[in-house]
Image (cartoon, rainbow, N blue to C red):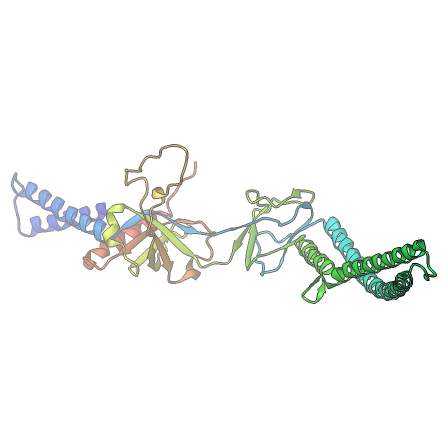
Length: 379
């Protein structure tokens, strides 16, 4: 564009010199040259500041790392790599043998626990009967002990010896202890039966909770698509061993998402970048095409300003060229870039409301940049 402006100005000067027959001397030529420098330089400075441009722009794609929740050997992988998938579609399967065995084992424990509850109920009924019998024996022993004790009060006329009285008392105490033992056993059995959670025996409830967990992990042996999208760079193969490690995803899934372009502008353009400004984007992969859009938002932080607590001192990034202001560009017509792969690079121009008549220069420059994408040599 600079060359175009220079050639245009040169042509105008040539026409003026010819039409008005201005002589070429040490006054006219330097005046024309100096006037061109001032005019073209002013236009370019106004354009660069008020209508920012950057070559650092890219379509950003958010990916989902697929991490299995269980460990095991992969036995099957989807053949639909890089193809559109719906949420819940099959991705890969882990050998479920161990998890199926765990589920069956807990089901057996639940059945055994339920039978044990019935046995406790039967035992409780038996122990209640034992308590009634022990109580009757205790009451009978108490009567005998009272009879022997009352009959032995008159030592001269008593038909019972002291030994018989003591034996009757000991029999009563033994019957009393037996009755109390029966009560204790009944209370223990009743406590086991009374241990209820949500109206169910505590042991059975715990085992059913374990069963839910085991069935959950069994279901997770089949890993499915978390949303609509596609799986790419599918290096996972049957026979590989996987485990739930956060830093070791086994597959990359790209969800369907709105196409956004992020551009990095000079920090000098901070006062001329505003959400809602009109923008134009050209892509290296679409030479000769200009895609219109607008600035959706200006990110409130610069990437190089991010610091984390560490064990050593950290310096400041004082060079503004190291990083710039990030802006999200929302494209008006996404269909124009559907043919492009995610992550395509491009260039962005933003048109502010200042010196709008100068924006035509930026638009011409941007289109020239797009046409230049036709010209490349690989060697």
